[in-house]
Image (tube, rainbow, N blue to C red):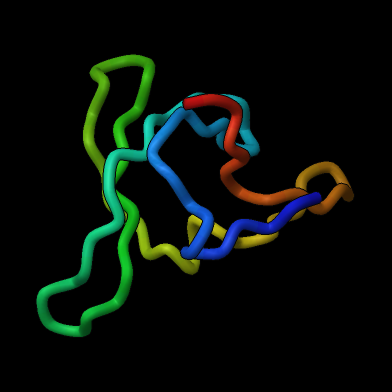
Length: 76
């Protein structure tokens, strides 16, 4: 399991650990706290746009007793 850090996050398609795919668009800064945020788009349903703290994007999560990264890069 390779854990991303913000230095190697790049635009592209990522798979969420629950199975859906998302396009990472940008790394942005929160205007008040300067926290790094990921701006991304769902590639299903209404194709909505979302933001999430980079620390959450890179989290290791547990599903069915297995540890995995929340978002795994799959292609550009």
